[in-house]
Length: 413
Image 1 (cartoon, rainbow, N blue to C red):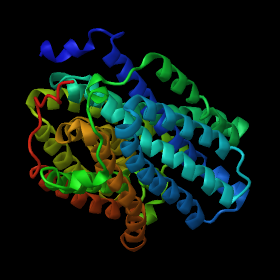
Image 2 (image 1 turned 180 degrees about the vertical axis):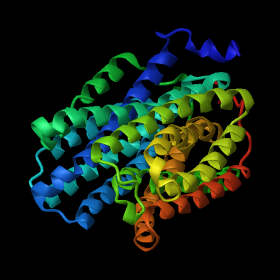
Image 3 (image 1 turned 30 degrees about the vertical axis):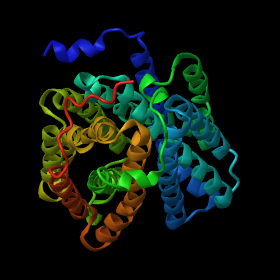
């Protein structure tokens, strides 16, 4: 176990600088996504948006992030991992500031589409940058550290929104999203391209990831990412609505304030889930902890959704106790992708492969909130959440079809 923690040594080494840059980029990515969700009611009131119009903005952001993520992977292979990370952070931070100038639905859609392009590309560049800097023995821990930025960003967005929205409004909240641009300049000054990429030779196009010997793994990994992202967004996009929704509609009937505390506790569990996954994946392999996580959340999701119905008198307490556990298992499995995808693809197409696999799934997952919402209209939101277990069970079947990549050293530069 002592060997597992040696990766904490050398905080000023290039690999740590790359990891901090990618983690902070993903943290700020999460903040920007959540700023819109927390500000949604204020934006709807000012622009007189219907629920479908507000949902359209979310869908456009998710779809554009999918496109941006695929493009970002291609760019990372062409112009470099560091350069792509730097440019994408600039795009989404400046577009976040632009969102503060929106005067109606058309301009809001324009700015949020630009935000999405930058957000999607940021993960593609950051994940491959981290993977190429870290050795196989610690790669999953490094990937999980980067991925944990999402939970921190979620909690930071909740705190900032609570402090700023009532006093200053949603436009000031979006202006805060400009500050990540400073990170881009710090990356340019302090982070260098991985040697493995600099000496990687000729670059090839996206078609290469669909040809032998990569094609089979590309298709299975893409299906795996799609299943997990469908399950994640089908569950977590509706959690605030489930917690604050009326008991008659299958919700928990909490106040907005209390539902925010419950969501915050769940994200604390998610943070621990990310980090623990990395420790387990470097010690036992990539696939065993993933199976543990998705099978656990498949079992927990129906129970969590039915608590207000089965135990109405104790629902608040039970949801608070179980929430961090759902957060732990329901998000920590994402730490798999940063390490395992890098180990499935060679340097020439590593960014392209990671970007396509993860972000194709991200685009398809935009459908999940709609389908869960449609089911909720018929059977109630709590019961509708149980459908997400099917996606997690499918993910368990799919990951078994991929090779175990633990101890895979990337090509030597």
